Image (cartoon, one colour):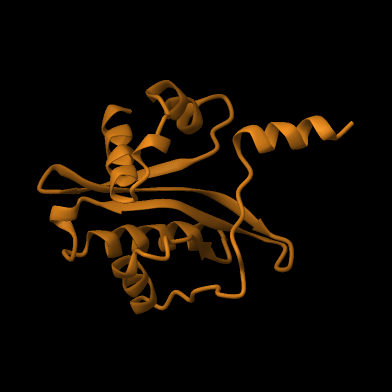
Length: 149
């Protein structure tokens, strides 16, 4: 857990949102290995050293009536980028998806992260420009939950 949480915090720093990375080892462990695991992770190593990770979970397409994979995070240490680590992680996840009968893999990228976007398009991923992402968290989430009743 310490290694994965450290990589997650490095990702948050890269994405200029370190103050939002408030998860703990206990919460991460529960999410990965608890009674009801909700996420999976893989760690990439090169020469016995951790160099990146991917964190993912199962989704569902109502139109396809088939499961899919949501890639929540993909991160490669800056010093190890452009060495095939990101591609190897995605290849592994594509294999997992096919083995499990998942119909698709999806993820998002920050609009300013052009190196990542260029990489994703180079492997054949398509940007879903007609879709807008939304997030409800914190006080607005609690307020909405209280309004139902």
